[in-house]
Image 1 (cartoon, rainbow, N blue to C red):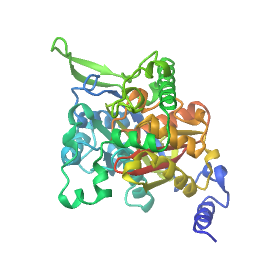
Image 2 (tube, rainbow, N blue to C red; image 1 turned 60 degrees about the horizontal axis):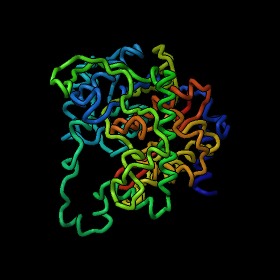
Image 3 (cartoon, rainbow, N blue to C red; image 1 turned 90 degrees about the horizontal axis):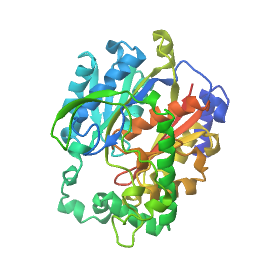
Length: 417
């Protein structure tokens, strides 16, 4: 018997002998469930509604919103894991302070973590694993990034000679735009296919915003904002993504100059936006949620994390998604919606095509090209977007995934309830 079959048998035995989607939709007391998943709006780095708001303040806002929306007693939350990429010191000190500001007592532990672009998802998975082992009873996986204040060359330290003199190690610090350009050329991903995908992302996001499909997942936050024209400080309420642009077409994107090579295909219009934002997901076992009277909106099933060559960072979802599906005991056709982070149209197009996923199942409300990729936030943002859309469309199974800087991929399987 193959190792894959053994794992599948273990999964099916856990789910009462059933296999595939039928097994996933069964309910068990020890299921790891989600009772609240929300995010802030995502705003343009350096220009948008959160340009003057610290990452910890964004985090405090979404954590407070989780308490208010879920009705959870803050004293019952044992641990908060926060994914973030750019803050000095990992943000550990200010994130602990943010939890206290949000209303959690000193008994609630907090930590930060950094797995690059998958940090928000890794935070959720870490909480899920702590729940599975009984280490905690209630936890929050969150993600936050202020790219307005902390994005730039200083985010990567200089390599020592030891690292510089190892070819694959040195590749870890190649800028993502440059390596994505190299990947696009190597894998024959045309500019036309990238621009078409990017235009579709904008168009889907415009329609979703116009019809109010983001409202349920966004917690409005009141922040201070300085008008760049007058210098006047104002108090504003940020309640919608401000990077979404109307009227974008493949033709209009085709006129933008390449950003990383004269004969390149990647540019500002078909790559993720630099953005600010935060998101948080409240998790516990089903038995705990029922005891507390928490409304269950979905459950976490399985996750995967894989490594790929640093220069092929963008293929991460292609490698990670099949592993997560195998762990969950399902096929790609059992999945109703895929949230795959649009770091670059080039890598997303390639992954979707190679996996054979129908385009209509991918990012139905648009993605990071249209509304932004606050690095540490995205992995947790995807969960709120995914579960909200599964519920709205009366569908069940979803996958969230992303490529990860330095050459990794991560994916997770979710079920809506």
